[in-house]
Every structure is written in C-alpha cells, then in structure tokens.
Length: 125
Image (cartoon, rainbow, N blue to C red; front, side, top):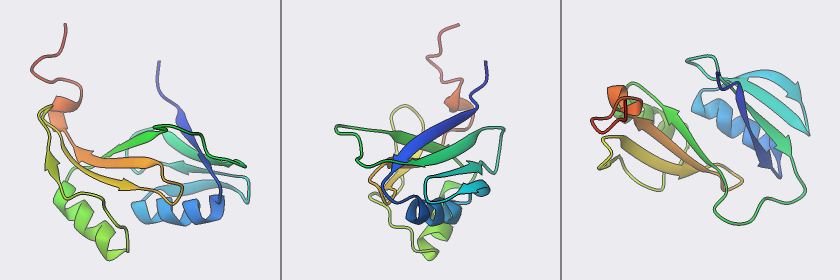
C-alpha cells in the first residue's frame, strides 16, 4: 500500500494555495475556489485542499514535511514570510522539528529525521 494523498479543509482555498506554494509544493490541479491539488517536491505523494464552510473542532490535522537540510529550509521559508511557532527542536524520538500553522490553523511540522524516520533504534522487527 502506498499513500496517495492527504486532503485538508480550508475556509479560503486561494489563501491556502499561496501559502503551500511558498512551502515549495507544486500546484497540479486548480479548481478554485473549491479545490486544489499539489505534488510534493520529493516522493510520489500529493496534497489537496478543499473548501469547507466550517473547520473541524478539536486538535485537527498535523502535517509533517521532511526536508534534507532543516536549518536552510527554515531560513528560506522565513525569508518568504512564513512565520514559525518554534525554532528547531531536538526531539527525544531523534527528529529535529520546527512548528508552524497554515492560514486555517492546521498544524505543520517541518522536520528532518533521516534514517530515524522509519528505522529508529526502538523499531519493532
């Protein structure tokens, strides 16, 4: 099984589209104002945004985007006007992460885990 795509809700798909383009996703389907779809710059997965009248309540969605060079990526995104909630955090699960939110409040974690993404020392065989 392979993950094809993740779709998130948005009150304003046009604003969300510009935000995710700044993050580096490539727009491949544009059906504004109700739907867009992106290709991720690496791998085969895609990412979609669809229009909703109200956002879900509660903790909601957390999106993880892995990058090879976290400090450089964070610096580049800040220069594009992206605001982060944290600096880079070294997590006990061996990932380095920085947290932010998209315009609809969806949580995003830009991170680097390297081999520890799928093969941490505590992985079950």
